[in-house]
Amino acid sequence: MKLILAVVQDQDSNRLSHALMEHNFRSTKLASTGGFLRSGNTTFLIGTDDIRVEKALQVIKENCQSRDQMVAPVSPMGGNADSYVPYPVEVEVGGATVFVLPVDQFLQF
Image 1 (spheres, rainbow, N blue to C red):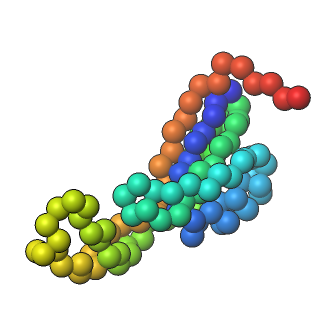
Image 2 (cartoon, rainbow, N blue to C red; image 1 turned 90 degrees about the vertical axis):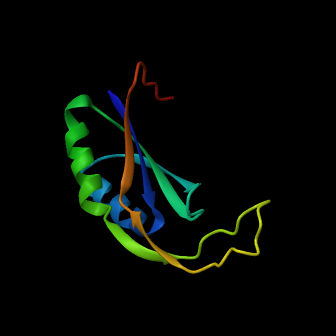
């Protein structure tokens, strides 16, 4: 058995949740916040048998696309703000960061 942790952007959360249900994957959604852009994310906890891991990864990949987004940089803390000009920059957001972990024991009460 494996535990899949998938951190996805909030924009992809509902689409991924529906797709996981369609493919009979049970998951738990947790609200999370990214450290770089400080924007909303959703972390999915998905427990599955070893033979279904590749299918789960395929579903995640198909439903979590990267996209470019304009963001305003965060002002420097403690530094000299006189030379800081907050021009928006384009960054790639979205997609998914996925961890697949072994499960030693699974209990359900």
